[in-house]
Amino acid sequence: MLSIHVDGIIYVVGHARVIHCFPKGFRIPAVMAYAYSGSDEVPSVAIDDTASTYEIVKYLLDMGHRRIGVIGGRSDNIHTQKRLLGYQKALFEARVLFNPGLTTTGFR
Image 1 (cartoon, one colour):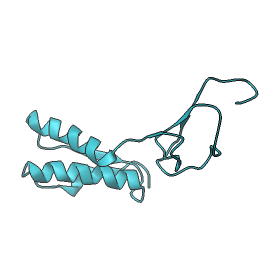
Image 2 (cartoon, rainbow, N blue to C red):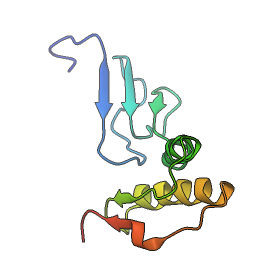
Image 3 (cartoon, one colour):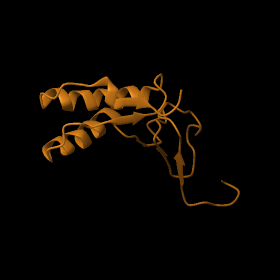
Image 4 (cartoon, rainbow, N blue to C red):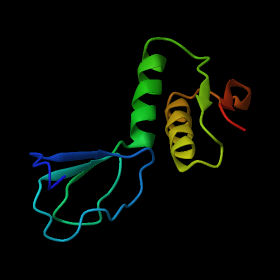
């Protein structure tokens, strides 16, 4: 990146986690998307899986829907688990019973 003189770097990662890929004092402006840089020099932007799913399910509940299903990723994936937590929290607050039959994972 230094040799081709880019103006900046946006590093997009597949799963939120701490990634130490930029050395201290890196000269190109950079930001981590969907990851954490572990450095004060490189800002990070990540999705709040629990809050995002909560807001989506709350919206559907406010629209009158009560049978809301979820197809998640792998059951052992932290993002899937956090999204299910947001889903269940919204249902609980709306006094809608959680039905595990309405949830499944996309990968086994």
